[in-house]
Image 1 (tube, rainbow, N blue to C red):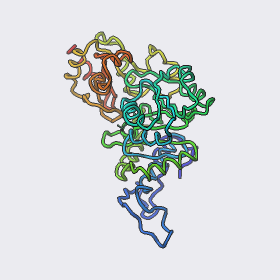
Image 2: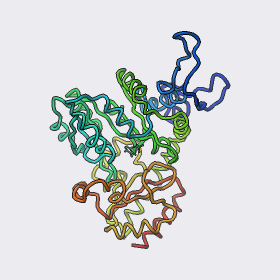
Image 3: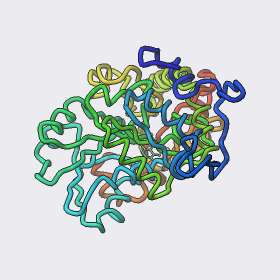
Image 4: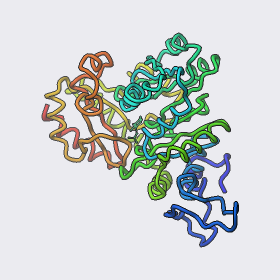
Length: 384
Ligand SMILES: *Cc1c(COP(=O)(O)O)cnc(C)c1O
């Protein structure tokens, strides 16, 4: 078995997955079984029904808890289902502070569904920890942040916000989807909970949805296991296996994502048709110093300004290797137009306030050969 002292790549391959005791299989079997035979009343091998527990899911959860440095992990059918699981910690009258520029589905869930149950939400620019401090009320239970933000790649100082939260006895959750635990480890910086859409870098191959909540306290373990069993929004054994398989190459993939991300950012930054590149790895990024301190790499998410929707569309129509599509974190390079795609649900005024212009294009840089990616972007920029 792996131990905490082992390095990240070792744990990503071995944590939670010793060779199968029955056959020696080096991969955790996909336990496609809803129920498990019991020996006598009250006696089983630790499993009775797969909504409550499943061996493939257990392996993935042990693995992800190890990678994030948490004490428990629970996986759900999507990233949104994982956020919904965190919400079940709240009661009527509770207040939540959420980052002002988090994944669009998060405020949609909070405002359109969860607020019906008498839970209140404030949206705060968490890049300034003082704004978080001022927004805390006696009823505040949770601060939920995302860093870097989508698509403008603004950072929040996790440690500073965690300190503010803990002074006031509030729990802090970080959506770590954009960096993965390979480059950013919020629990080491003071976060109480980490969640991911495993759909993105953790699975890494754009072939399955999933979500995880990683906890740090005994009550997290108990609560989220109970939520899995009681609400049922669990990840299937097959998709657990896909994530287990994806995570084995996380370290390698993230290294390559990062190397390619830096090259694409530099290329665009030096291109005459691009007025601005948002990437924490560029010295021109306003929080470059924080990025160097808080993250061990800069990753492969970036956005850039083409000047107009017409320019953006000309580029997006012309790319051949980069795929125009939503989502991120897969091995293939995905390119998108936030104003009409991921952020279309916002009004034009709200987008303008956040700085999401009609000319903004976002890339999730994949792990293809960098020369091919740069050539594709270069020829596509010729359309502007
Ligand atoms: C995609 C995403 C989500 C939602 O995850 P799904 O798996 O699509 O439900 C949440 N947060 C971030 C940062 C995301 O990128």
